[in-house]
Image (cartoon, rainbow, N blue to C red; front, side):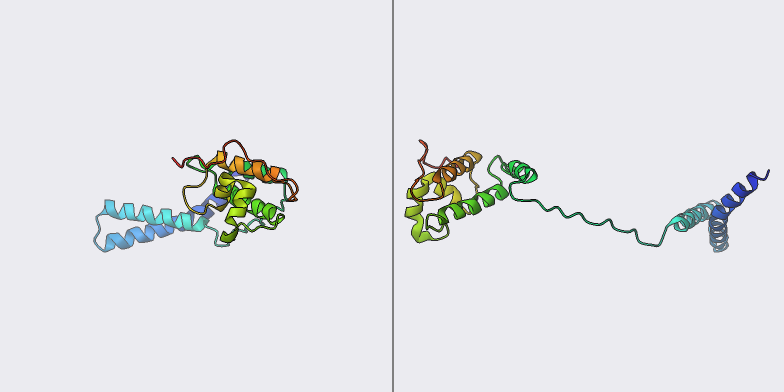
Amino acid sequence: MTRVRPVVRAGWALVWRPLVVGAAVGIVVWALGMKPSSAAVVALAAATLAAVLQRVDATAEPRPARRYHDASDGARGEVLELAWTMVGRDGRAGERALRRLRDAGARRVARHGLDLRDPEQADALKDLLGTRAHATLTRRSHPLPSVSDLVHTLGVLERLGATRTRPATPDPDPEPRSTR
């Protein structure tokens, strides 16, 4: 019997407030003219609300500390992320991969004394990179280039080298592919 008494006390501590609230609300709405069955439903709703509010903790949950990931250039995760972003929703090159290719292309042609953003150097850039690679690197509107255009441009930039003594050899397919 001594083990039962603490359990009954703990149960009563949880139940007495909702019972009192439900009974009080039920009596008030019945006294105001509500049918006894409707007053019982309102009393049950009030008791349920009181039970829920009794269990709600007012203190805010602590937020977990944010993890900051320092990825070094060329790390495994970065290569994996770049591979996943190469293809966009419509089968064309993804914007993030194209942005990274433009950054790499700008650095590579800058080593040869040219600037991708300068429209006056467009002819020299076409001679250095080829028409297809130049169109891929300078396209700023939709539709985005295809993945094969991206791969072709990446190959041209790899073959370009760091100095002007080793010019890029154009692929047999120098023209940009159709946008259809």
